[in-house]
Length: 276
Ligand code: KIV
Ligand code: NA
Image 1 (cartoon, rainbow, N blue to C red):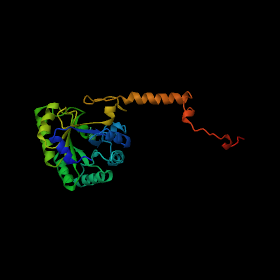
Image 2: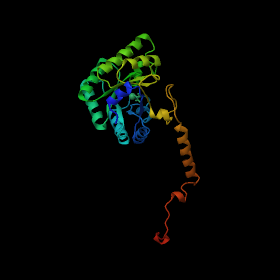
Image 3: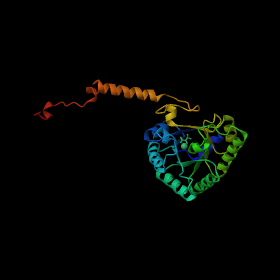
């Protein structure tokens, strides 16, 4: 199992960190077998697995349910679990309780929270002091999409770029073990990455980040229709799966399945009950 110190070392030695989301037992198992460094149980599960329009419907119970399955599938991989919408904004006390539940129930190695407000900085410090490692997430923060006004590239001008850099440094100073940068220009991500001593994990943030994270269903093109610009699809499971299910459906209708190859046959006919 990777540790936060290994992560640190990887940054120092300029080895890239690979991170992929997973939401259940098989996806986690395959990510681990493929050698992925860190698994993220993202609240993107709201969209890619549960069919919601955004991440705001996802609950703490949803995250725990999925993260437990992920852990069973990838027991030797560093697992980060997202704290979902509004589970860390109502009061510091409630946030700590929710974090404790997610962390203890799922055997996660770290929790991820979005943003860099004073409340988030305080929470990052409190969780870190309590023994819960925090992965930060800035740039495009999908839980606040309704405030941001859409899924847009962040930090495109001097003011917002400077703010992003300061936010990243503040999060690091408050204990964050890694920082996810989502949808920021490559050049800005390069500057932020170079200014941090903890790894910057990019998604739509260019090649210079210390690592990359993408959504499982996106890289496989599985159950998703449109892909954002920053996603590279490494296969097209949509068409493979659709074809396979279509063939099965036709075989059943056309009485092509199951043939005897797929049936249990009895040798001794006397063993069968008499009809009538
Ligand atoms: O929920 C998620 O999948 C994420 C990644 C896109 C960083 O937060
Ligand atoms: Na997320």
